[in-house]
Amino acid sequence: GAELAAGLRTLAEEDERIGDVRGPGLMIGVDLVRDRGTREPDGALAEALLARCADDGLRVLSCGREHNVVRLIPPLDVTPAEVAEALGIFGRVLSTLPSTR
Image (cartoon, rainbow, N blue to C red):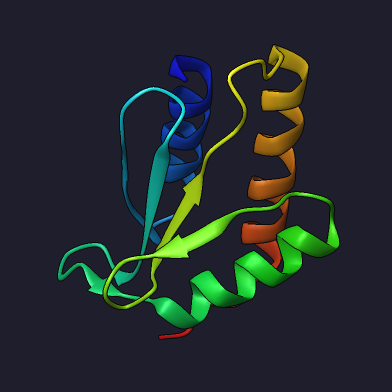
């Protein structure tokens, strides 16, 4: 969980559309926003990210009132290599998606 959260926080430093990374243990939410200052939710970005991640073999869920929080909930026996692979897919897909501002 710590490795996954740390990797997602690194991605957040590189991408202003990640408003927050939160959650206990292996249940982590990534809050996608149009503007980090106003924290305006970006559900369209989350839905596009979910679809493209699925195409690349990473299953993630959305939640939240605006469906803008992407949840990563790996199994308890996830390996460091699998965490690295998931972070790679997530970051690569997010970087290819246009902003919905």
